[in-house]
Length: 388
Picture (cartoon, one colour):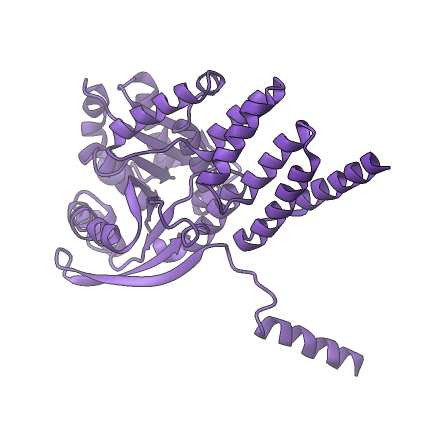
């Protein structure tokens, strides 16, 4: 009888929504008809956790290839990194496949016909550029920073897009890219592309797993080219992740790619050490490069405040923390940081007010708050000790 009650209670909790195992943010389905491809294209969309809370902010967009296969692990990875301020929040547009080989390959290769007709990459990129991106821009709060992410033949498409349409995306992820395609035809343009003198303001992450043969040799050839050229404005990272197989390089690679892209777009430690004026200069230049206003990140401004706090410049630190609270009123961490400033300055009552708000905001934001509760408890002990 006890077991039956326990089972019924567990089922009730699940059905009543008390057990919430969803990734933070909002996932929806969408679709649009492509006149270029003459077919309906289905999409899986994930909006960031703070999308509804921060209605004044537009977000970068990740266009995810092999959408049905890669959607779940990609949104989970990005959300985990967002909670640790290790990646930029993004809208994810996952494109479900219809004719994968056709869409992802730049040339027709008769020998590959058993897997499907090939050579439709330009049409697929036309669809993304002329139909999908405008559609996303009208329906969702997207800014001008766009990333394309692909695995295997999708990785081939990502690098082909980089070389053939370098202005279309501002970042490219290529996991185990099939650079061997059609006798390594992409290499015909690769070196001349990397040698061009004009500035290329984009980022590339490329990796390879425990793969041999033409997969590995073409990857090694391409990364050697990347390392032997230094095109202005172009940043890249490459990883040979031998602990992963071909099927898991996208799973492991997204974590590394998100983090390294984030670092590539952040001001250096030296810039941050010089204070807010230098940070603003950095982001003004970033805005000019990418063609839209990019405001200083929460993390960079917070680090300036903590630098001031370390120097015991409490007035400056608190003022900066307060500005971050004003700019990011939905972020629990902003209130927790301000509490640190008040507590360091001896204003324990104000610090407690912010600790309480951090916990309250954390519930709305749906972030882990054990550390906030611990700091709140320690502060209450300090206040009690001061009153004795």
